[in-house]
Structures are given as C-alpha cells and as structure tokens.
Image 1 (cartoon, rainbow, N blue to C red):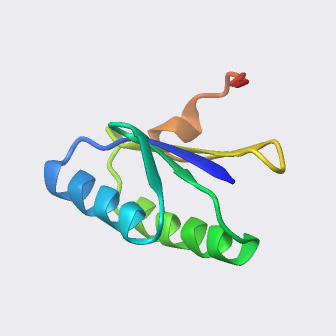
Image 2 (cartoon, one colour):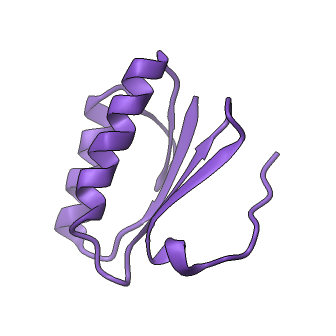
Image 3 (cartoon, rainbow, N blue to C red):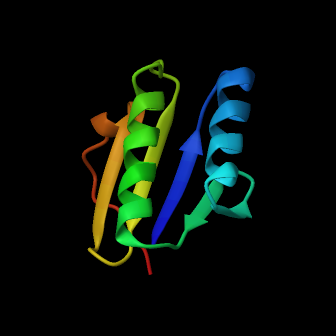
Length: 89
C-alpha cells in the first residue's frame, strides 16, 4: 500500500492528476491524499505514471509518496529539496 499526497498549483494539472489516481483504483482519503492498496505490480505501475506527471511539475508542485510496506518515502517536484525527515504513524 502507498499513500500519495500532492500539492499541485495548476488547476488543470491537479485535476488530471487526481482523475488519473482515481481511475487506477486510488481511494481518496482527503482532498489531496489518496491510498493505493493493490498488488505490487499495480503499485509499481502507478509509481511510473506518477513519475511521468512529475516531469511537468514546476517549483510550486510537489508529490510525496509513502510506501507503507517498505517504510520508504519517494518525493517529486519541490518536495525533493526538503531534506528533513518525515515521520508518519
């Protein structure tokens, strides 16, 4: 399972990103936080899709992915430059 949290400034890009997540089985937990709970293959494919969106991000956009199973965090966009540790329970 992964948790995807995003902050995308452009309305059109944010809407497309949100629809892409929902289309592929993500469940909305909050306005910009989704849970993806599926097989490893599906989750890996989602990470690739998210990465393709990240190529178009500006410095105002960020996506943070919490991989619950592997206890790992992946960052795209502006969040990459934040070096502080993130604690989640």
